Image (tube, rainbow, N blue to C red):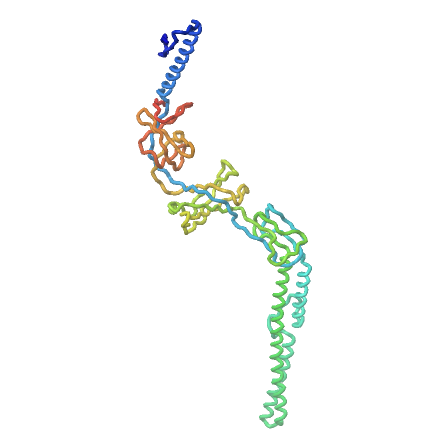
Length: 418
């Protein structure tokens, strides 16, 4: 069997069996299809080659070494300045609850009222005991005895003692002169000793009554305090966080009723790496931002620095106080904080436009002659539209910033533009 070979403009060969006959139109149509396919393949290869060789317009900038003041950046949480569980100091039935969760309260403001009936009766009883003791001394209500000798009982005993003393002295003088018998002297001496003992007993009795008065005063004041404690008050100005009391509830001593927090100022507690221990001092300014207030910062000052470094995290705690007059911050907020320090160091900086963040990795395109080379870098602080490069670049190297609408790629040829 023989074959006829037909040439093609696409450098392909069309073999036609010699023994077969085909219409001329069919042969021509096949040749057109083959040549069209060849033309498309050649054009695609030309376009790809053109794209690969096309130059990319870029702006070339140099990596600069600058002096930068270091800031300490950290994260933490907000805590109330003070927090206390307010409890009942007396037993009794709750008559009225005057506040609820979320309310702002002033220092000394009444929160809960407990029935004072039983405690008021106890107070009245103690006042009666006190007045009774004063009456035994001949004192009016509210009066006190300044001197024991002013008591009526002591005055009478003193008068009897003076009379007995005079009679004793007279009897002794007469006895010495032999004008009275010894029996009369003995009687006068006995009356004198009895009067002196009576006086001593009177003084002791008044001392005992005065001690009772002091005791009744103390118990009266205690009863008065318990009556006052039936109104439970806020120990400081703040906000009510929790409520655990209802009207009609019977409270015992130390039963919690409210949890109050002081939220102005707030405490900010931050974790700072140990290498920055010398960068922070008490009184330094702290700038705080929270997600609940985007674009806004709150100012505070470092108030306390923990002297101990956590051995697991290798960090120490710093506490700052932040004013919260508007009540925009709440305890428990997650915060980002910046503490400017006095430490000045050298760093390599490039414009932020030259930095790309792809799949969790920071990359730049270094300029080597007229070709781009993709590099992975580690970044540090950001300042004034520039970013610090900690690792991956050296001073004097050049990096590329893509022109508008352009995309950079590794090993691409560039054309520097302004």
